[in-house]
Length: 300
Image (tube, one colour):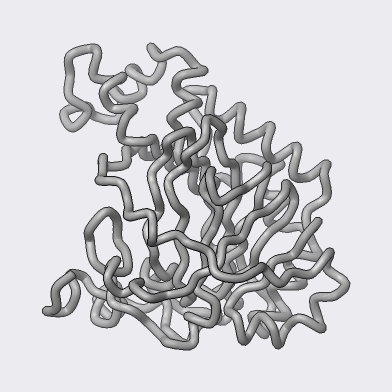
């Protein structure tokens, strides 16, 4: 059922000072304290909730993702691999750029499952086909929290599993709203869920506390569709280390990013995006008039 198999482009490593943490994380333990933390969410642009997802749900989700990573057909809309995986597929002699989807699928079948799993970076579009992952997205305390923060009943409009393998590349600083064809006033809630231990070394989320209040920032196509590195100079972000079952809910306008995985372990996380049921899409060109596409006549 995989509609697209794609590969990250090899990119230069990021400067170490892009991901330095300043200060400690303020968090709540469980969902009961959420109503008292709404003001904190509005001020900071994010809220870390410890012990948010029950062990049985998170463990089932992690096991499902591991099976998806080892299989040939992950039964989702998109699978993205690290760029380094291209050289493995090209041992057949055909450049990946010249492979159609059928040939890519055949090439994947020829690779050892453990090697294949070690290079998966992202799955997308899986809640209709994987009940374990749908169950996390529909976990009632989570959806109730999103409804409280969004101001109306939510609908899920994006599902991703973010698997940063050993050496997995950075996701540069960005605002999620820059990717979404939604009006700027739309309250979009991202939810990033740790399925294992998350540290600064293996690719923890970094947030620029309060950065959502500055509005949209022009994005550039550099290592990714991203905020310019120079725009982050002098910023004082904060790292969000987590244990399995912890999560962060965040405003789609808050600048955030994750550094390269410097460990030998995979970092497993789920990410869902929700909007209120009344949200309506806008044309892509309207979004790009605000966020890009190439810096709006300025340099980076």
